[in-house]
Length: 282
Image 1 (cartoon, rainbow, N blue to C red):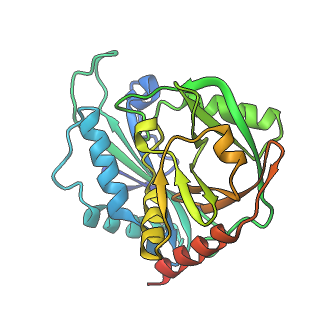
Image 2 (image 1 turned 90 degrees about the horizontal axis):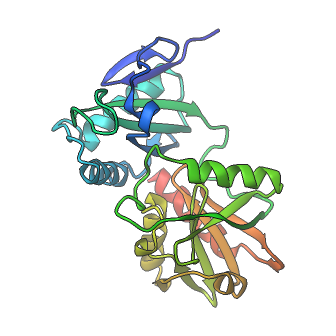
């Protein structure tokens, strides 16, 4: 069996080499952050935005941010890792940051460690799903609106429970609601509605993750003079739309074919997927 490698605190190690103890705070308390990053056409996509978001998250969680924690240094480590794992073209990368062990709920240190993992992706470039997703609302647990709602933490039980419901209902994805009952995101993506050529997406103040791909789509829309409104989304907003698509950093864009009794087209999703692939080739 070929060995697979990861990077732990800047050093290449075997994925099968014991490195984390049972006292790890990510394991015990979910005291961690992570970023899912895409390698497309050999290019690390939107890394500066990922690093900016994770550093903001570290500051929010009162973790110490090392001076060497820069986009340039992380990109160097990623390139070293994908070469070692023979992933020349496309891959899914995960950067995990966790507070160093010690203490119970109250940490004894705010220093951090980090882990970078890589996983091969068969598709070359961003590929739009051929069949539209079938989605519905997960309402059993609502997502709270607070200072950590917008960052990607290791405390992910809400998403796990929604994923279990998705599986049991044989859906392709579930949409999450916040404290006020508005639709804010899906299990792994931000949400965009298209109505009469105009984009609508949930604002960050509604509690959705501040998605890196969400930011790119908004920027692409502005560059091509497509109006974007950030406003609370309801079931009525979704059923009144012409298109519904989901965005995340790894998959890019996935278009939704059906939500409840509403069916959608995918013209705008096709357009933005083309723009993403152009940015990967640039």
